[in-house]
Image (cartoon, rainbow, N blue to C red; front, side, top):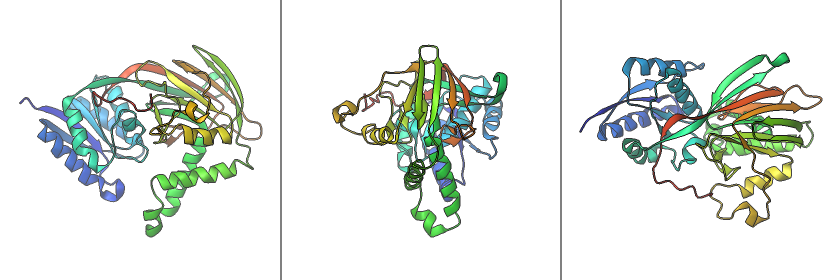
Length: 340
């Protein structure tokens, strides 16, 4: 059997140090499939993409594997793209949301390592779309830019994310509370907090969207989401017609707390009832390759944003462009999405 070389990128200190065991186990499983994995540890302060880029240049692996959450996926994928080498990316999901993995039927956690190692060994590649986002200032000056692979969203969802991160920091120093209030429970608690706050705080905003396939003006929004892969926030499919490799991103605008709650119920990925069966009507399908977003909210500066589950910059003007099928991702070859 001809053996392959790989990089296995993960953070051994994640999950209170338990990730180190998962990294070692993943390397062992890959070796059993004829793949020799060189372990690369992530680094803080945004240094991981450059680290991955350098490791690819130095070792010329046949593939690069990410072990971690959606944030780790983002950093490893950016390192691959920066290298300029068309290296397939394998995935060992470990995060709470696992939007990337669930969009392709890949489970998360230590129990999924063996099955996913087999998927990686079979080597079925699906090339997925990549997003480039820019925050703009006066006269179109670029204030910040980034690459994303799952979603960019604006409004209430990023506010919930910020509240979740705040709650995580607050409970981290209380071990017994951190053991109870963690993972999805933190996200649910933050969502309830922001939903209640939205009753009194001026959170709503207006949006003008100019895309290459449509133009849209919406008022009094709570959220606007530009989606690359189907799954959102770990549990929902906001647009069931979304495809991760069609060269288009979907735009979903949510106009009220009632609509937000309807989507929480009707868009559950594993909900056996389609939204229209529940009496929840879906608006026109908005998909494009290029988006220009203009937000208006008197009384507050900028609208909060997030990319791939991480807080990003607040602003009132953004541009998004799709790089079609730019990232080769190793996925199960026989996955049929249950939400179609």
